[in-house]
Image (cartoon, rainbow, N blue to C red):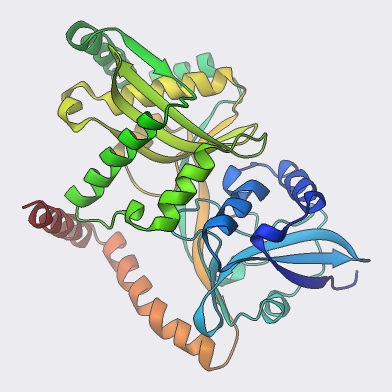
Amino acid sequence: MTTPRIDVVHAGDLTPKDLGLWNDLRRATATANPFMSAEFTQAIGRVRRDARVAVLRRNRQPVGYFPYQRGRWGHGRALGLGVSDCQGAVLPPDGVHLDAHHLMRACALNAWEFNHLESSQDLFLPYATGQFASPVVDLAQGFDAYETHLRSRSRSFLKSTRAQERRMTRHLGPLRYVHDERDPAALRTLVDWKSAHYRRTGRRDPFDQPWIANLVRLLADTNTPDCSGMLSVLYAADRPVAAHFGLRSATVLSCWFPSYDRALATYSPGRVLYLRMIEAAAAADIRLVDFGRGEAAYKNSFKTGDLVVHEGALRTTGPGAALHWLRHEPRRAAHRLVREQPALRGAAVRGLELVGSLRGR
């Protein structure tokens, strides 16, 4: 098998033929995650000038794609790094004869950093330095089977969630769940809640970055079989009490930005929202709900299992690659140490909360 020719284009310059082949290749994978769709790449291309795609060709015909962002000094990143929950190349099931360092040279990169690499990405897995659980809900057998799983795992969790539904109804009014809300005001409410949460916990607010705010608005208006923005909202007497914005393909719902009205925290509105959302997803033939990498009590309560994602960096040789190592690896090692030591992790969380409280004064 010959090495494919590689042409680099801006993410916004993909042809209709490219878009069709790209999504056909992704549908053939085990999990057609919308973050790996052609539409997500196009959307990033509309909000970032550094978004690129290496088009792999055989006999002048496209056979695969490698999306990335190219920064200064030839330092590359996974497309949408920081907001994308699924990363890698889009390749045919039978593979292509491709050397990772040859791909880097064709893209004029001396490093490519990733933090949510799919486990099926054999081309890049040798360069992973860490792996993380991405909790998921398997809905292949439908919602009734999922409810049975919840009861067997923690009957009290499901029972208390249903009780909170009834309690909200008594105290706040009738509950109404909208699976695919198209009211822009509801999205603005969610963003306001989420931004307040980031500030309160001392974390950087991604919505302060114009490209992320624009990306979310753009994807909220995207409605295709392989990538659609989906805003789900739980109302109590027409008052939004919890909301979630994520992306869906025909079979996968990827969770992204959840939040709720903090004044109603005692009612657990986020938990009620997720149960409604999972039920509606099953009814819409979604087979997998992916919560994304990261520890959270609610994820552990709802999940049926885990996928695995990887972080790391592919580097070539030379001063540019060495500079990338110096800029990133000490920080990555420090983060890994904090994650692996419960005492350090707790201190870090408390420190962030203190920063958040100081900002709020």
